[in-house]
Image (tube, rainbow, N blue to C red; front, side, top):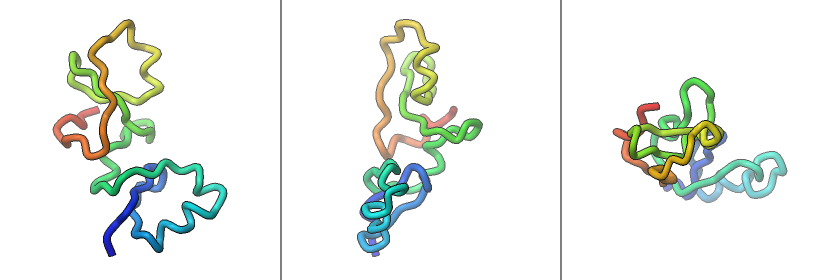
Length: 91
């Protein structure tokens, strides 16, 4: 069966029938679900285990959302889209 969603917490993709617990179980409902994606582990910070969500065009690097407070008036940040090019994932 084809995956319909990927879970960024469990780093797994699910078909419609196996996605059902994420829609029913209270703890799983809090998980961030996105469009299906291969290699979910590439979207996670290897050091901190947190989702990489931002890309700095100036530094050509990806960042976690919690790193945003350390940047000073950076105007070259972009939100990463699911399926971002693997070449940009060099955190």
